[in-house]
Amino acid sequence: TVMLVLFIADSASAAEKTYTVAGDSMAPTLVSGDSVVVNTDLSEPVKRGDMVAIRFKHSSTPIVKRAVAVEDDRVEIKESGLYINKEKIREIDISLWQTTARQLERYGWIVPPKNLFVLGDNPANSLDSRRLGLISMDQVMGKVVKTVVSGK
Image (tube, rainbow, N blue to C red; front, side):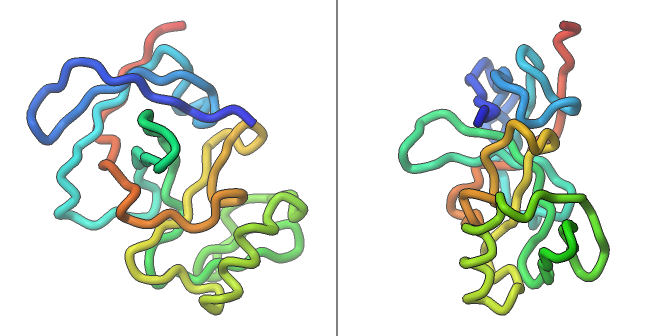
């Protein structure tokens, strides 16, 4: 599995940090060499569809994923489809969803407070909530507010 890894660069302001993308888990939206500006001010809640930078305990380098479900959203995995609040958002391979299914069973398939359900835009090459489960807001460094395509 390939992860989208970001490398830090100069920042535009104290609340914004610029990273360079390494990996293709968010392709075609982001590819290696592109840059993203991450706003670390999380006073506004993360919304469905936002791209977020996430840091894991075992890594000092953040990854970017898309929030597909936020707190209180209902997640359903059925008939080869992923449904958020009864709307089918993606065809899926159910065999890749065991971690998430076990975790969501505990919460009645509702994303609990201060958690996100995230996916890469390129599911074939993404380490995301399918294997990592729900993402705590404590792990979210900020929202991607700008992307700069490298031209590769």
